[in-house]
Image (tube, rainbow, N blue to C red; front, side):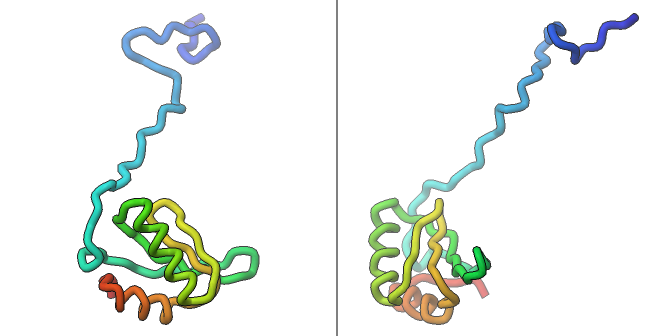
Length: 110
């Protein structure tokens, strides 16, 4: 009988590898852009029966992003957090959020 290549103890020579856990890293953009160079868009999700408003992508330094979310949370009177390059806010507040971000100088996709 022919030996199956994928049996335990098989010889994986000739540049073959059985390790499929090495995933290629997503290319996360680390460039920092000015507010007027952003093209933000909104998304709404329902989580545990409540609406979450998501604004992304932001290309800012971590400290600038934290300062932005802090001021927006105070102005809007709602909770929010940073997830990767997006901001998530509690509630359906996209119109108020757009108004405040527009005042700071951010641009949006139509």
